[in-house]
Amino acid sequence: MKIRFYNTKILTAETDCSITEGELCTCDDSIYYVGKERNIKEKYDREINCHGNLLMPGFKNAHTHSGMTFLRSYADDLPLHDWLFNCVFPREDKLTPDDIYVLTQLAVLEYLTSGITSCFDMYFFADSIAAAAKDIGFRMVLCGSVSGQASNVTRLQDEYSKFNNYDELISYQLGFHAEYTADIELMKEIAKLSQSLKAPVYTHNSETEKEVKECIERYGRTPTALFEDLGMLEYGGGGFHCVYLNDNDMDIFKRRNLWAVTNPGSNTKLASGIAPICTMQEKGINLAIGTDGPASNNCLDMFREMFLVTGLQKLLNKDAAACGADSVLKMAVSGGALAVGLKECDCLKEGKKADIVMIDLNRPNMQPLNNISKNIVYSGSKENVKMTMINGKILYENGEFLTGIKPDEIYYKANKIAERIR
Image 1 (cartoon, rainbow, N blue to C red):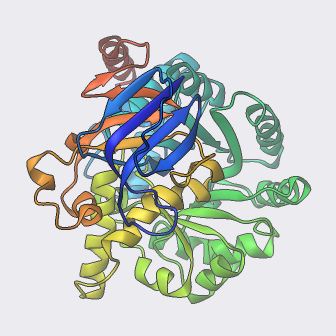
Image 2 (cartoon, rainbow, N blue to C red):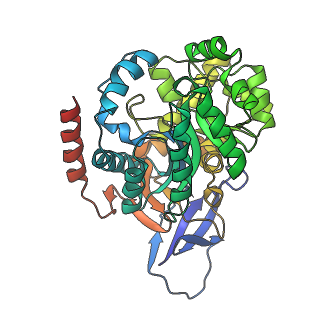
């Protein structure tokens, strides 16, 4: 299918957040033209007049647990460890693969309304997650979620092989839940697997003071230093949250070219703390943004995350100039893509994947157009997402889902799952 978008503003994010005017054309799953409007005769399956609205790369949710939609607004107003061990883990034990299929699709519908075109999903029943994303047409990167004993590394290896040969929309990265839920022998085996596959590794890292303190008590070093000493970081990867990294940790992140994925909504709600994003920027550390799961956030909304990234840094540093809007927008778009291995989705350019969002500028919160990129970060919201395209297919447009599934049926099934587990 060939689609032409014309009369449009374009933020390619190829180098910075500058905006041009012209047209963009897609063919099947890729972009084949970005530039000034052309007066040439060419046949398209559809031509879309954007009426001066903005095309930009889709947001990339670089850390989430999509299937946790069943716990949205259920286990709230609790500190992280009480929330996790007393409320979340016992109820997750009741989930089935069929549950995860439905709950993941519910999350994907919300991603589409937020202009999110891919996510890095760490949760149970990877087969169900992959099927849910594939059936909707959503780009999903699965993150290994093993924990416990060393024998579980076999599942990680099997999933890595399976889901990197599953579907063009599905890929997989090595990962485990966290240092505090993994035996040391499991972490050693993951390090060996990473070295064998020459693959990066991802995990929750330094989310709370308690996590870091107890890791030091167990192993005499921080989680990051432990992973480094085990040989787990030789091929890169990243950490989710990264609220309590010390200077040595940050040096390791920089040296190993790791990605720090910040999750300000979840960290704020669970009172975990504020990640030192400005310090990381000064050190040249790679940065991306994730929503975390809908049980701890509870909203899968990249607009809110972007505002919190910059807003919390301004408060933390007592500097209104800290963590400028354009740098945050790049984290949410290009940073997220590169963090999870989606090198073909980081910008709008000929040959890149057609994962595109149209931002409605003809809304009160976007006017006047003094600075469009800053409008997106500081005043943008889901109401401005006019269209979400993934792999050349429009899945959400003008408030309607074009996914082939019925949202009301997903809502009904999700409520039934939540009732059963409660």
